[in-house]
Length: 59
Image 1 (cartoon, rainbow, N blue to C red):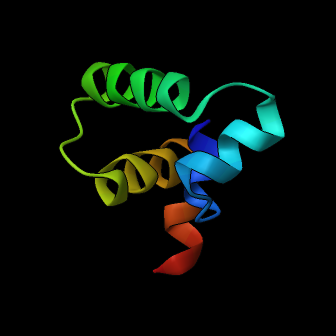
Image 2 (image 1 turned 180 degrees about the vertical axis):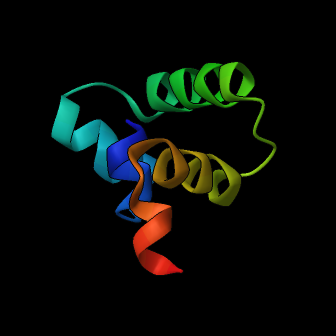
């Protein structure tokens, strides 16, 4: 889900891709953000980039 969020997909698009309801996506996204300690989607994506080492290439 974080990969799709990083690609800019909406909850509805993610739900279609995974064949689940948009509400389920919202719940999983909320739990994921809590575990990451991220307050916003952009912060979660930044953490993903830093964790994969892609942040070094951008500098």
